[in-house]
Length: 423
Image 1 (cartoon, rainbow, N blue to C red):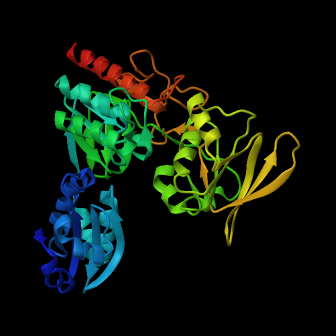
Image 2: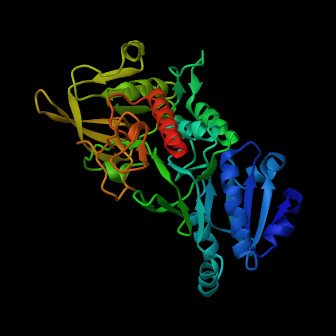
Image 3: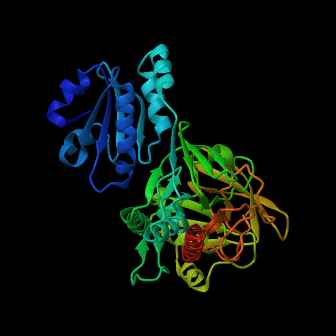
């Protein structure tokens, strides 16, 4: 592994044969998550591939020239030519391996894979999921001197990290950007001492035996497991939605609103998320049409008042979408009036869908008690129907789902786990 600067780039990379380049930054959680993986890849592939690191802040001219706008970013070169995928953000081990394998022969790649030895690590508690519930559980456990590991297939933060502003979290007078609130939570838990294994692939989960396999080679064993995998946006399930997801249809205003500057968009939904995110989108778009199935919005009164007062926002109530179609000038949405059953089309440059959430339970193959909507049922200590397994946050069956309720769940589960371990 070699740390280089932009003056060495031509010699070390363009004239360096087969090279993997990591553009990193300081005070960068995704960079910290990548570092041990990149180091491990250098140990495995080092005889065939050169691995170099470039500090992005001190080599901005080169980074901008190469289109590197964020950290970390990993680029792959072969004989001076940029090849493979441009990896950014929460980079997984499997993504690195896929691109590194493509740089060498199949025989050499197979030999390297065969040299990887399975490992086993043991902890008191595994926390699966890094949203507010999981992070709070990790904080309480580490302060109680419980040896805990937090595992997440993404980076810590959960839904909070993609929320524009959070105005109802105690302790902050001014509304906080969601990604910063998530960062504060994550850093506090990490500094406390909870181990992190994030941006990993969870390849096996056995709740009864309290084992978890990440990246196919590392088995993690524990005495207790806290499930905190949260929930994901619910899809409409109408024609055209799947095909246009990420290509005109979005489920994250923070991620994509900036792409609709001075354009027209449609927001589907009438709850808190839909109305609050529509307000945020209005900072960019020139017109927003909110389509909602009921005669009244379900959002809180404050959010409704802001939306009704916003001249950019219009409402189409008692109406549901029936399909999406890509047209030259944007997206055409087929909608049905629920009072008259008449159908018509509304056209816009893009669509944002906010119609609720579903629990992230796809990893769970064990028989565990759930409610009729698929959320995991727990008792007041957050214990599930499986001994030693707890569930917190948005994946848990409960009446209200907020950041504060997830934090409360994580607190309760951690205290319950600590007392059980102590006894």
